Length: 106
Image (tube, rainbow, N blue to C red):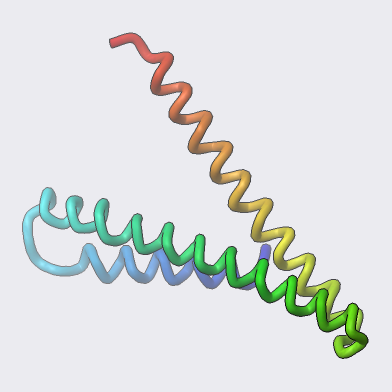
């Protein structure tokens, strides 16, 4: 598993645990978790993915200029590839879930 992905998952779990630890009724806690936590986790994942891809591009350009070690370039590109594959897999699961919901009889 990618180190950044593991860190993002652990941060999301910590945020969810700290957000649900306060007082208030269950509907209030669920409403806050549904709005703030999911959107912030999604935003963090997108920002992490974009930064990973940008870092990979920077390393590739540095290698083309002869200023980067090939091991660092391969590591950076592999990290970006794994991150992008994870995002695509999640997107595919969301689309499949949406299609399943649309097939349900009303």
